Image (cartoon, rainbow, N blue to C red; front, side, top):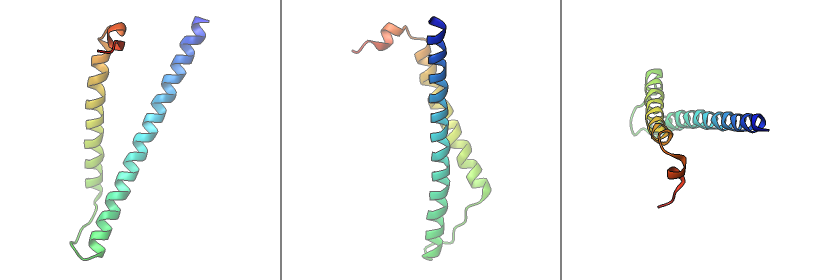
Length: 91
């Protein structure tokens, strides 16, 4: 039974990781489309001449990925070093 519990926890963690990855990719796609749409509307209204280049999309993707890694890694690393009883205790 212990092996089944371990497998269940592993599959749950993998599923949660896939959901987070999917939500991240969805956020990236929505962000790119929203940025392109805003750029198009600004150009269409004649307020300012804008364009969205591939390099700006790659730069935004890289920055958002770096922020996600840094601000996801630090809390995870900190939590991994805590005693589980102390981590769950509410102050």
